[in-house]
Length: 392
Image 1 (cartoon, rainbow, N blue to C red):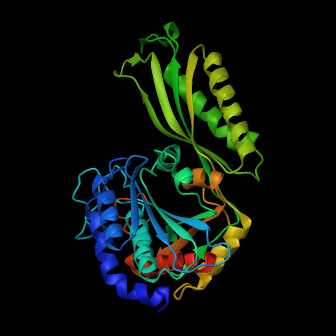
Image 2 (cartoon, rainbow, N blue to C red):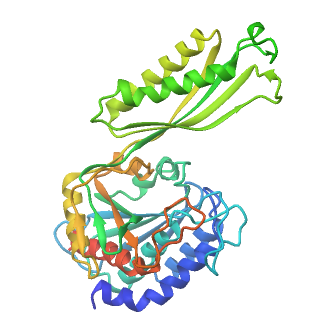
């Protein structure tokens, strides 16, 4: 029986798992219920289970039943488990039962697809070598991948290569994107506190207006990608928050702004940070004030290695239901902490389309988003088939 045939049989069961995860979302480093269910199912299927990596992370180990030259090879398959701190809309009957928590990025589906692949691989073990099933916490901005690595993930479970997938509402179901090189952006976060001198609104000349100052800073920052970075490179500075003032008639002494920076190349990342510091500092000084800057490197760019991406694309193309594998295209300016794992290992991160005729097209991080369960057997078949291909 092929992976797709078996996973089609498991499709109703996988759908039930996924919707249960969806109804009980947990945010980063709080995935107690989710990780417990993952560990319980892996144990039921005779899979060796290790818990506590990165807090709530789980690692399952499956050894193949064949012996062959190089059978000490090992690969890793990773899925993220965490939800987002947001409320869900009213679209589905299995909507979130946890206020302020929602699986709005499809990690419930990613976890389920890896569980489906795990069950098939535990039943068949039709490979030579070892598979490490990595169920990761806290992908959404909290660097759960790095936390697992800091706990010795790859020292305990070394991998010759490592793979992960993510759903994409932007692409139709059956389409896969496998880009060699940079697939997703590096992300940095900033907080800027601008300081001036408070004054009455009737006498602005007696103060240093931080509201006027922040307007100039925003203009200066917006000019960096458009005027100081090569137009053929990618750089985005996004300001998501501005806070200041408590009165309609008083100029505030401080104003705070927060946001993110996204780049695709390490050298551009360094250059944007330099320009950011200079623009904020000098603009504040020109307005008569000062600036305090907190600039935090979050995730590096997600960079797929060439040979592994080719082989991952081949494994995806072999899955019934996959109609197109895109080998060229633009990276996504979102970030992903699987990037930390790819800094330590060769591997590939693929995007699987999930948009159907009447479902799966709502963007991620949206209250109306839902994972398309029709993708479950496709993604799980890819993961299982990849193991049988790489550890033949």
